[in-house]
Image (cartoon, rainbow, N blue to C red; front, side, top):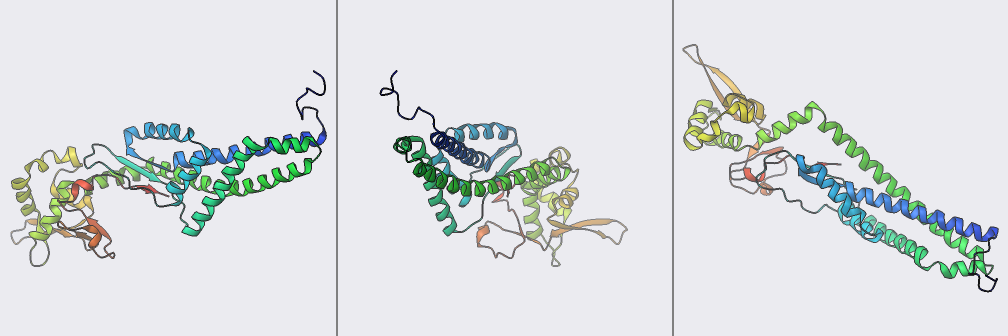
Amino acid sequence: MNNESRPRGLDRTPERDEVLRRIGRNVVNFQMVEAMLKQLNANASVHGPASQLEERMEAQRTAVYRKTMGELAGKLVTHVLQAPPEHQTPDEITEPWIGFHFTVETDAQFIDQHDQEMRALVDARNDLIHHFLPRWHSAVDGDAETALAYLDAQRDETFRMMDRLKGWVKALDEGRRQIATFWASPESVRQMELGFLQSSHLVAMLGEIALKAARPDGWAYVTTALNLIRREAPDELIDLQKRYGHQNLKGILLAAEYFDVLDEALPNGGIRTVFRINDRYTLHLGQDVASEPKSVAKTLPSVNQIDNSRHAPDQRE
């Protein structure tokens, strides 16, 4: 091969080597940005039954890692910087349903700014990978400084975005760590069991009975509740210990944490147990929860609403 047929730019000079070094540096930086976009999009949100959670996470990672840098940038805006899309939970579930969503709280102005900066960075990456050759030819012809200035400006913009994404990745990882620590604790087991008990049809019935069968002083008899449930929904009383972990209605009332429970002394020396809904809670009888005052601390589900409440709450960072 003579010098005339030799491809332009293969002869090494310190200037050309420096241009090539900075090209490689920028390519690696862009790949680091893309890796962080993948990490954020793949792990920012997951919902599903506990037994399928790892499978769903792996499917989500596979789908994300096939996307282009531009697609990843757009997904980050819609799924992390903005309100998450509504997630549908089945009305009937047979095991714990776990949800996690990581969101960066910000305003519309920053979202628009970030979107524009991220789009510009994607364009810069595409320009380097697909359209740098004219600049390389210019460097070969002796104008290496222009190419170096272009590559350094590109690096500076990439570093700014990398710093931002690193902060979000760190916050996401910390949130996931805290969630994992909680789910491995005895308190998570208690909260899960409490959630299923509070959202049960039986507790909803007890709440309605506490309102409809109350004495003038606001207390209702547990024996009245027992008789009504035995007549209207006898299946709810079958094997309470196995289903709810308590042997009787009094134990369920105490464990649900929605009720005040009191043993009253009788003239003959015996006792009778009465209950009422605790003042911290309210019961909606066929009403839209959203229409209630925002000052309500917590809502006791009604029988009409209970099928839409039988799942564990989302965990969000």
